[in-house]
Structure formats: structure tokens, C-alpha cells
Length: 430
Image (cartoon, rainbow, N blue to C red; front, side, top):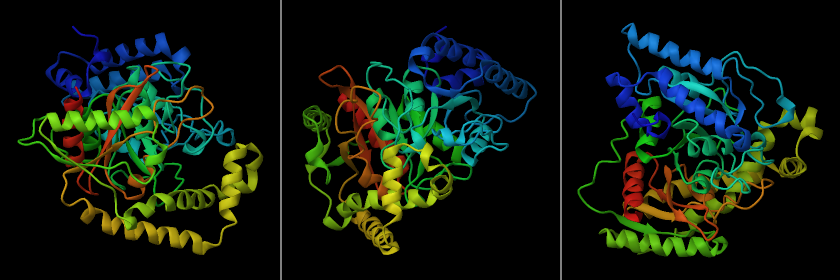
């Protein structure tokens, strides 16, 4: 039998349901991977193999008793350390919260448990999912960042530590690390998963989503947790899409490998039958990208008001400077930026109504060398601000042998279409 840690989640579910595998066997296979690579990858902030195995055995006991098993039954899930898990430490990437152990699950974790997922551990995040990177290395090349802020979840999925990982995104924290690690990142439409029990940074932006190795697994995970029917993105559609190739308002920041990648993606899509039109967002939509950092930093200063007041000396210098600067801005600045968001979101569906999806870069380029910076989210800001579903899929490798990704975006609420066309694009790229 194949090593269970190498199988996609969709196949693991099928084998567990048919009795070919047990949740315990699946967990043990993933723990073996962790034992061999975690010392150099450093994906976890908390991981107790005994607790993880006992949870998997309990899932098997429930199934054998005839209890109704959920759509994610027996699947190991890595949880980013901005989402509380009862009985596991939550530090949120900051020494300020070291030693804090919540008594309750976040809504996202409680919903995942109800769907049958087995929590394998807490994964590394950057400081409050914003600034100072953690110790996680890129699984393709440990000298490079895995991206952030969902560093541990992205690296852990890529290294086969778990098939499903929770990520969160305020700027590019799901889509960018997915591209850097050569996996799938799915940011659902804003609000798809409730944020209770999450260390929220931006009320207007923060979104909980998935890091997986296949698009089908991403649909399985978020569909299973939310109860939404996201379809089967791996089923072949009856036609090819009409794609808008859009570099976006940050086009000038694209690295040479990304410019080359987008040309290759357009050619591959055209060969596969797609109609590819080049264009840009109208100014009313594109303006949301410029407003994004204003909202993120000013709302972040509100979210971390207690930390700023009592433990500012334990924050990174860059975060402290950003938040204190944002806090000094008059409230009208935030209100104006939020108004820009509202106008952009209202105009966006009409701006792409002639297309099935937007094709755009997932990151500026390859993962930067070193662990002191998790990379630039420039190509994610606009879509996050628009509350649109976005899916990053692997798209080959750059000049240094590191993964690249392209991003598919559709209108808010059309998540099944985003997943379907993302998988179509992945197949077109070969």
C-alpha cells in the first residue's frame, strides 16, 4: 500500500471510509515524516505525537461504534498559531503571549473537529500574522523563506506533515507561501469561516483559508468545514474559460521569472482552448490596493491596543513603528480607506463580468533567500481587499529551482468557480 502521507486528502478519506486505512495509520505515517524532517523544517510551535495519536485512535473508535463521521474524518490538520486550540499553547508568533493556553477551541478548529479532522499540532506564524518571521524553512530549499504569515502550515503541507493546513490572510499570507512552497492556497470569500477565537488583526481583511497539495483537497477541506457545496474542481468542465490576464496595480514589482511565468501561463491556457484577454482593473477597483496598508495598519493598531500599551518593548521594531505611526493618523484616514474598499467591492463583479476568472501572479517571484523576511505580498493585496475567493496553484519553478505559482480570482461568493478554474489552469500548465 502507498505511504498514506503521500496521498491526497480526497483519497485518504475514500480509503478510511472503505476500511482500507484507519485514522491511526494515517496519523502514524504523517508522524514518521515529521520525525525525519521537523528538526530542519521547524514547522510547528506545538506538536505532541502522543496526543495526536490518541486523537486519531479516538476517531477510529467513534467510527467503529457507528457514530456519524464527518467529511474530514481521520484527516490530520495543522492549525496556524493565531487560531486557538483548547489545551495547546497559543503564542500568536509573539513572546508577549508565551505560555498562554486557551481552554476553548476557536470556531475554525471546533468546526474542523465536527467535520472529523484530527488536530496534529500548532504551526508557526509570523508575529501576530504580520511582521517578524518565525524559524520555519522552505521545504524545497532550507536557505529560503517558506513565506508568511502562514509559514508552518504551508511548509508542513509541502513536506507531507499533514494533508490539510489552516492559514489566514490579511495581505498575502495564504497565497504567497503556497506559491513559495509549491502547493495550493485557497482564500475563500471573506467571512466563509467564523473568526471567533482567532487573534484578529484587521476586521476588514482577515480571512481564514486552506493550504493543501491539490485543489480538490482545498475544496474538500473548506466545503467540509463550512457545509458548502464547492463542487468537484477535478471534474473536467464542459468548456475552456475566458480568462482576464491582469497584472494588477503592482505590476512593476514583478520579478523577471514572474513576467516569464505569466506569458507561459497565457500560452498554456490558450493552447488548452481558453480565450485569454489582457487588461487591468478600472481605477475604482485598483484603488483598493493602495488603501490596503492603511486599513491593515490602522486596524492592526486597534487590534493590538493592549499589547502596545503594556508590552510594546516585546514587539519587533518594525511592527511597533508601523502601529504607532498608524495610531497617530486621524480616524478620517481609516474611514476614507474603508470607503475606498466599499466602492471597489461594488465595482469589481461588473469589471470582470465578461470573464470566467482573473489570471494573475501569486507572488512577486521566487521565495527570497534567508529567513529574515517572508516576502512581498504585493500581488495579493488587491484581491484580499476585494473579499474575493482566490486560489494559488503550482506553476513550475524559477531560475533558482524554487516553486512559482499563479493565482485565479473570481467574484465574491463564486468560490466553486474559483476552484474549478484554478484546477483547469493547473492542468493546462502541466
